Length: 401
Image 1 (cartoon, helix red, strand yellow):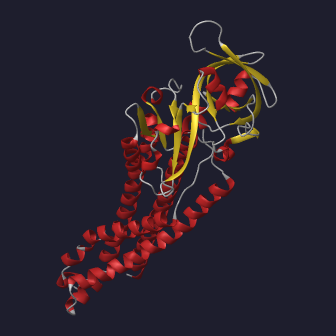
Image 2 (cartoon, one colour; image 1 turned 180 degrees about the vertical axis):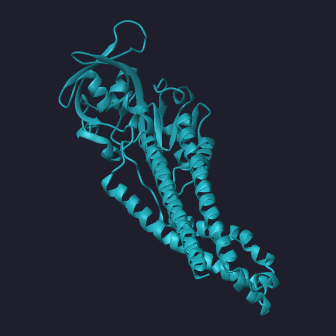
Image 3 (cartoon, one colour; image 1 turned 180 degrees about the horizontal axis):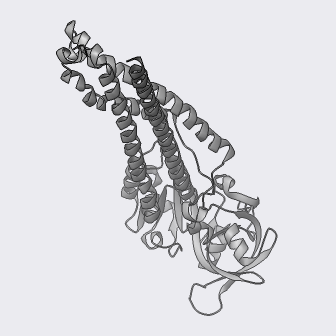
């Protein structure tokens, strides 16, 4: 009889340990999934915004092309109706033109993105691999910034010179030629940018297109944190002339943002699966605890205890097991997350994920919500197996064997 009770006790202990391990492992997986998913989304969106702004204001002809085909003037924007310091962080003018860029050994078809003195170069600080930024503050010069991808294809580096051939305004005759000097090299890991763009002074584009000094291809608008992107876009669009459009970065790069949105779906699947695994293991452990203590349940019922009270006893016991698993899961999960954040152990293929290292983003509110959600879902679903208590008949389980 004693051997049988020891076996039962050891069996229940093993099941409880398995339940704790399942809760801990599930929480570790959820913490990693949430932090990496949010980190990837934030990093990818941030890269796109850095290079294009959150809103893009340009003539309708320009918004569907990488090349500026028609000029726009700041006087046309009616900024008084929408440019508030509470909403708008920064506005910068740009103009782009296609060019054939040639080095001593190779050539590439690229888009030369012209930027002016209002361009925020410091946004690119984390992507600058070598050198410095072109000087767009003083007199017109031939300095350019190009990507490491393009530099490798052209077999050039800092200090080397390249020749750019632009189609002239009449589309016939000799192309416009510019000689550029490479002063900086950047790398975002984003093929859409790294394989296509080089940065130069906007005055080159203005002269080639025979535009005045106040004519640009479009404006990139950066919003303050917390401002609703769609709502602000509608407000700006309603203030613009009919030939000028305002579109969000999501509309400018729809395929990229659709791909990023899939992360939310994948994350939801992972969270549901992990919650199911943890809850099923806890349900099994709870059933074993109830059945193992069926005589105790019968005795309590014989003494007048209600089913609801007995259920609560077992549910509080289950909650203790859940909290123990959550504590262990948090310790392991946070250690892995902060380790990746500090040491970047795990690397990714930038051609597939647009980042070279797994980025981490986990706010305190997300951490609390995740833990609270696990506790709430598990304890709520455990009410179902706890109803086994109501099926236990004191006259049967207390019978002497």
